[in-house]
Length: 322
Ligand code: 8YV
Image 1 (cartoon, helix red, strand yellow):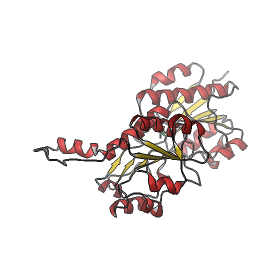
Image 2: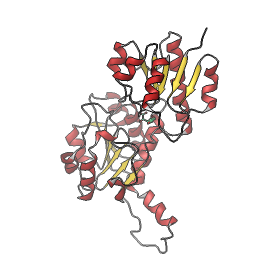
Image 3: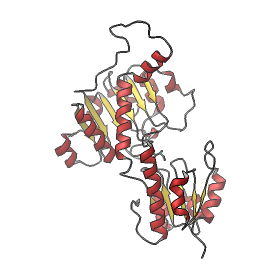
Image 4: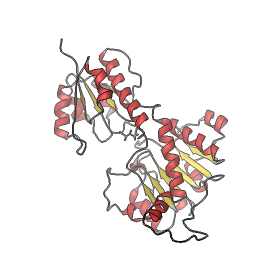
């Protein structure tokens, strides 16, 4: 009997893949520099029993309709805005994601980014490295306090709650906005529900953790930035498309807000000429929310376990439904 065929659109470490090779015929895209070629992906979708994809792979109608024997697409991310879930369901293809295993790691990064932006850590590090540190001055590299300030979390899912936990440790006042009320977060973390407008007006740190949906796309735009405190810092570790980047740039230049910590952008990867990178009050990261060695390995393992379960005709651990 021929082994089921899995195509992985990135190169995963041997130690992760090897245990699965006994049962499966695994092929990986082998370039670290270039993303998988679209034509190759379409061709592979036509041959594979399973695909392991990442956010930059468009798993759309065209691809899903090629999948004659495709049973499962395991996305190496908690988000699945790159996948047409309805078409997958119509075609009987199971979609899985990687929730939970990345929650704490992404919350760590979110809080680190908030701190790095508020306390100017990247700028200060550059200052020392460039040899500019010749004297001490009372306001040298002075940033803004985090403790006892107000954080406003937009999107109170698992990661939002984990960020709220960290914020409580810094004695912060926690506001949140979400599609539905989160009673547990209110009771356990003292998080206070606010309308979106109230939250952006009152928070010192506005943190976007909402998934990208038609409702959230562009939700941070010109008027919203204008409503924020001029001392506010905007942090985004969800999806770049949740904020209008041109409006964010203008808001920073015009002083509507004081700074931005960004792990995500509208079109990733961004080039060094991106306008936001010209601003000292912006800290930019290359979408590394879940990028700890431990968590990325856990995500990869979860993808392969889900694939194995579906190909064994069992329920996957973390299935996505519409
Ligand atoms: C991804 C992410 O892990 O999980 C998500 O939704 O945004 C990241 O943590 C990363 O982009 C790899 O696909």
